[in-house]
Length: 211
Image (tube, rainbow, N blue to C red):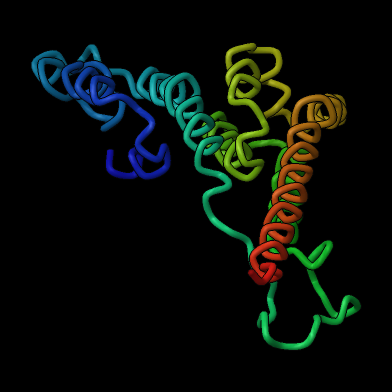
């Protein structure tokens, strides 16, 4: 549970944790073994049902909390160039990052990896849910968690995510273009705008008119 609090940045209500712990069925699913009152009736425990419960909690509760928290938190940290403020201007030709912004370079790398994983398809439902969490975080919450939830609960879409056939790959390409690339585009735009704001503020602080 401690990892949940960190990844959601404390966005889940305290009552959520209380409800989880007070439910023998939910705790059994999370622990993947009979827990609480279900220990007295272990025949009612199903490993496959437990896995489905875990994925449902991740999609319906954790992903929305991660998106909410990251939208509020995403611009708290500042992005810095890989050079000393007092040193010479960086050589544009030797910069590895777009527009000489490390944050854009990181975003580009994460986007590329996540898109490759999507186009290749997923080995199981768990892999898709984990990918969904990563894509929400990597896009600075510009990819909506509702997109992942809808894809998971719409069984034809879920099957396309797991299928390695050519038709399924074409579907994933179209799905990425409609739902994922637009989010990444928005996140890149936000990073660029944020970088401009930081640079302008730095200029204002540097050039303080004398009294």
